[in-house]
Length: 276
Image 1 (cartoon, one colour):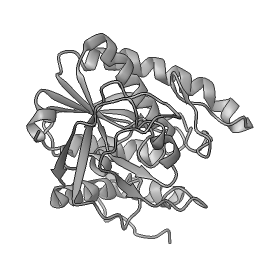
Image 2 (tube, helix red, strand yellow):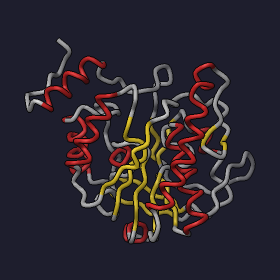
Image 3 (cartoon, helix red, strand yellow):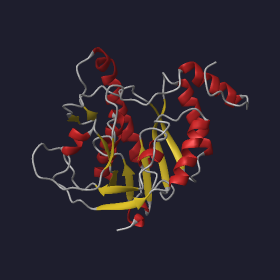
Image 4 (tube, one colour):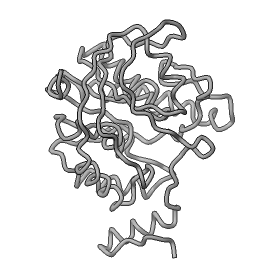
């Protein structure tokens, strides 16, 4: 198989802006459509505004956003003992989880409804894997929503091969019960850097500043991949990232610096590198 097998009449569905270039950089130029699910963030106003500029300037002919708000659910699952749910992952029993669980469930229903309309007529849909790449609850939720819609629309689903020490246990539970058909594609690092710089220019790059892309990415056809704690399983190539589990998230610019950068963009002034 080659890249045409998965990009013919295809849509790429990602949770957040910049996921497309982090986990799907080898195919992002070749898909027919890119769909961003969560582009709004209540507690990250500068990100929400910056993403509008990115979508306007994005170097692809067909880009759209569902306009859903992030659920602020990162790190609410128990990644040491992860348990899938219908709408994504079960949360740990904490006060913060209880405040966001209803939003997470509501977002799943909204995702299914909107994706059901957006994905009509596509032959291939490329999206997150069921362990959420490095381990993000909304990545898992988008995968679940795509799979729910697949049952109604009948397209093929292809998932990414990224994993981390944080999400490895959940990944292990999905390596049995499916055919390990996959396509390996070289990463266009020059294009990836171009898109990364676009996000940085608009102050909404969410990942590590020194991230280095892999030389290749593999995409696995999801034909009946199910959660299971038993079975020998099928192996496939993995791009494994080591996360700092003491901090877990990339360091982001402070809120004041984000706002200063946003104002500078609006006034067409040079953006500050530091909050001074």
